[in-house]
Length: 345
Image (cartoon, rainbow, N blue to C red; front, top):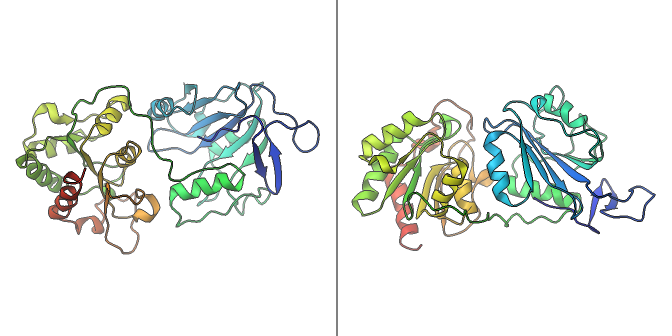
């Protein structure tokens, strides 16, 4: 998270504002306790969330987020406290105290679809603040924001967004603090067959074949799954003959999952959250891309990150069947990528 500190500046439209001005004019002095409001859309069933980033050092950064996002926000080191709200739309988001002054609202909603009619939009507009940071959109011509570029990588998009408003952002700064807890399976190769949509799931029988081959070569293999993926995890474990100690389904608590990933030899998955977590902990990854190209969501170019993808027309990232592009990868492709990582890491 970017924090506006005392004396820092940000830009609204073509006008530059400072975190602590001399008073008067376009920007009054930012008073103690002021905060930046960052509102986010629903994320992977976690519900919508919002972040208040301090403008001055004595300010308090607070996150309002669904249960799934609260712990990652805590562990990121970017905020000082969290408060929860129910999963779902932003209409359910707990609103801040009306007396709390907010200097900047940041609309982090993807601007690919019309903004009218979204409950989160109404909730965001009720917040009292001086400025709104947002992407330009035909339905909000009053906002002089940067353009939305559909084919841009997510990291580059949001860093460009911040840079537009005069806030330095580095798309290569991706690492999270190392977890304090111990890994439940240090040195294991982690296989994660699930994703939020079946279209991004490589077939489970192929994961099982990879697991069997790795175990024959002396590697410990652990399988993980999110909430609601117990059947998927159980099928993989049964086919690969994994012991119960190496089957970690049910949606691990974030702290335990983070420790597992940070201590892994490598992580193999589709284009889903655990791949991004592994990248944030500098762990070698093999990531299989299907409906969405890695140019949109893939890891940074680095030898420890192996990307498998067949160029072609973009598919449906929310589809109910495995994307045909994923089916073009055989077990040998994943094992070859893993061999390269395991022999050089």
